[in-house]
Image (cartoon, rainbow, N blue to C red; front, side):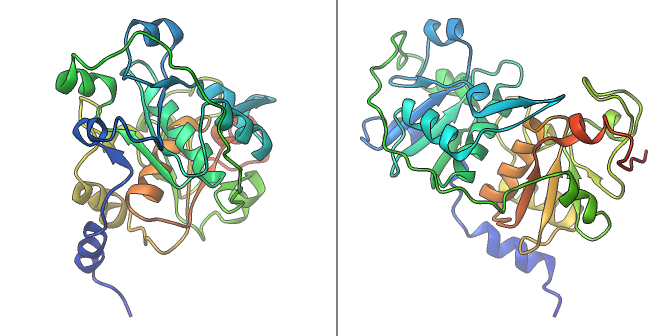
Length: 286
């Protein structure tokens, strides 16, 4: 039986969001002992001002280079990084950036890495540090906190990340979302580090940035459901494969689908076009 779109939309809307947290919500639990705040900006910017007790986290520590693309580190490596950041198994993790280039995507990639390795309580600060300053400009710090080694133990979920063969075998059978700007999708311009033009056949264009307001606050949940469920005709109970240039842009589309909208079968092709678009045995269209 076909479920009406509005019924799906209404039922999903009733589920409380934990994917994005407001500055007000974060401020209310600043003294919670399970709270771990991760700041993804560069060292200089971090030391000039950050949310109290926030720990600087490098998204690059969660990835490694393979040929022309990057992949998520092994579960043991992610576990080690998480522990070094003070993350425990029961930690309530909030991640944010300062509005600089790709910092929002670095936040979503760290969130992806931790969720793929079993972390349960993760949120991205809606609007980032700029929104925090707007609300609590007096509540900032220029000191790095002392970090107590965490006890986080990785429980890797093998159903989140997929490889080239997995994607190739499902063209035409599983919906796919491309997260790059449309000019790359349509082959009008070459993506950095990608030799060939175009997109994976039958993939739909879904630029990650279209899910945000100009101030980097997330769109209303109903608007997101309109994009993913009505616009792309995706079923929250079925599989969708998400990719981009090299994993970062896709991580945000994946995070919104998986964490905000409940697409628990959403998958991410981490190597993305940096692998696919640099081979001669992979189909492309535009």
